[in-house]
Length: 395
Image (cartoon, rainbow, N blue to C red; front, side, top):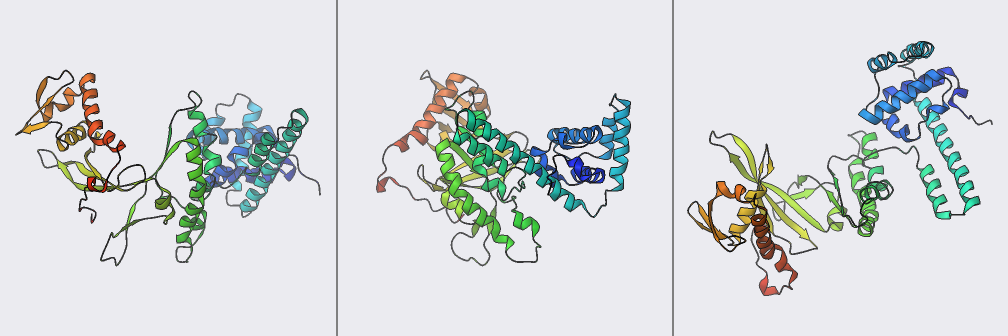
C-alpha cells in the first residue's frame, strides 16, 4: 500500500471537505492546529485558505466564517490566486452538509500525525549520528507521539499537566531568573469537564465519577512536579451541599477526595454580610476566609475583609482591622491613635487611614507591626496551652 506524501493525493474533493472541517468544527481545529501545515495541500488556493484559518485561530481562537474569508480575499493582490480561492470557497459551501466529514477528519488527522512522526524519526537519526543524545531523542519522539491529541480540559488538561506546563509556563517565567517563584491558578475545577462527561448522555450512569478518577490519577503526578519546580498551584472550586446531613459540616466540594487530601492549604470563602451606601444600595460584600486545612501553619483560623464591586478587596481597611484586633492601634469613639515609625503619636479617623498609608515609611512600619503579631510569632514552637479553640466551625 502506497503512503500519501501530500493531502492532495487524496483528491480535490477531499481537500475541499478538509477545509469544511476546519471552518465548522472548532474542536477539530484545536486538535489539529499544532500539526496543521499548509505545505501538504495541493494548490496555492488551499494553502492560502489553511494559512488564513491558522492565523485567524491563533489571534481570535475562533473558526473563520465566510464573511471573514470575503474580507481577506479582497486583500489578495494576485488576481489568479484570488479567483482560485473564490472558486474553492464556492465548492466549500456546496459540501457544508457532507456526510463524510467525520471520515475526512480522521483521515486528515492520521495523515498529519504520520508526517510529524516521520519528521521526528529523521531528526532523531540525525542527532544519533552527531552526538547520540538519547534524552533529546526521547523528548522528540515523545512529543511526536502526543501530536494531535484531543484537547479536553477535564482529561488531557490534568493528565498532561507536567508536559504542558513544566517546559512552557514555568520555563518561560524563569528565563530571566531561574529562582523566580511561580504561581499557577486553575479557575475553576467545578467547571471543568472530562471527555467521558462530554461524550455521555446525562440520563446514563458513570460519567459523574469520571472527574474524580482523573483528578485522583493526576494529583499524584502534579504534587511531585510542583515540589521539584517550586510552583504554587491554586485551584478554585465550588461548595456543594450534602443532602440529608443533620450533624457535622453539610458542605463538600466537587471532584472527589483526592484534591483535599493532596492540598497543603484549603481556604473556604464565605459571604458574611452586605456593604451598603447612604442610599441603601449594595456596593460590596463582607467576606470571611476560613482556613480549614493547613500543613504550613496553625489551621482553623480566619480573616475578615471587605470586597467592593467596583474596586475589589479593601486592602487598607483590612490592615486597619487587623491592627485593631491585635491592639496595635487604640480606639476612642471614631478616633484612632498609634505611634508611627518616628515613635510619634498619630491620631486619625478611619476615613484618613488610606491617605496615611501613602507614606511609604509609615506603611512599612505598619506592615512590620502586623508581621510581628500575625506571622512571625508562629516561627516559635507551640505548646498545647498556647492553642485557643474558637467554636465557629459549624459555619
